[in-house]
Amino acid sequence: MGAERETIVIVGAGIVGVATAYFTATRLAETHAEGARPRVVLLEQCEPGCSASGKSGGFLARHWSDGTDTEQLARFSYDLHARLAAEHDGAEQWGYRPVDTFCAEIDRIPVTPAKHRKTSHARTDAESAVTSFEVIAPATRRTPSAPLAEAARASPAGSDDMQQTGTHGSIAVPDISNVKEVPASVVPWLKGDLVNKLRQVGNTSSTAQVDPLRFTRALLAMAKARGVEYVRAKVIDVAETGYRPPLIEFTIGSKACEARASSQPAE
View: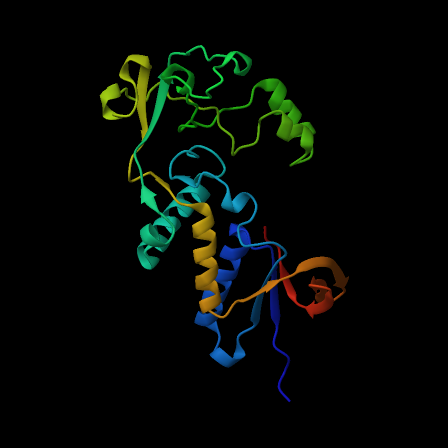
């Protein structure tokens, strides 16, 4: 009788869990013969991408983390999105599109309070106008001031106090003062007479967008095609078992199940 196959269990079918399943299955296909590959099981109690993964803006920027701890990660992630879109027709499958990105400073327009609005619910152009845009643009890493630097030395790494002081290396204060202005006519749907300044903070080689729900579900379909088992289930317990792989208990409907697995944290 052959040895029992290892099972890799991934909990959560948000984009983190689905991507983990997809790339795990892809890697196993490269390193193991078909009959010797570990099982990859993806558990989700709701629907794929049912929470934040399916409701975000889907905006991608290659350079907006430059000068922070996540610079390399952001650049790798952006390039990986572009590669996946090229390999799997992302434009059609999940709406991948490189975009030009702008930051606009717009005059504030008084908006009629709701209680004073017309009963017809129709809003005028002035009432509907966007009053401001806020974006994050490239910024150089800042050196903490003396008091903050002293606090960093005195506080344990990753403590709540340090995160609240704003000294985390992946966060940079936006600075677009050196970004060249462009004429408002470059964005034809903006009302030029309302725009004080318009700056281009990204182009089609550095910013893009996806439909996050479609992306999550398309990646899940590709993961299943690589042998990933998707199970609608709710994890109710993970028991540590010493040197052996942990025991994961989950429910499928009203039925309780168990799996001994190499657990992979996911969304």
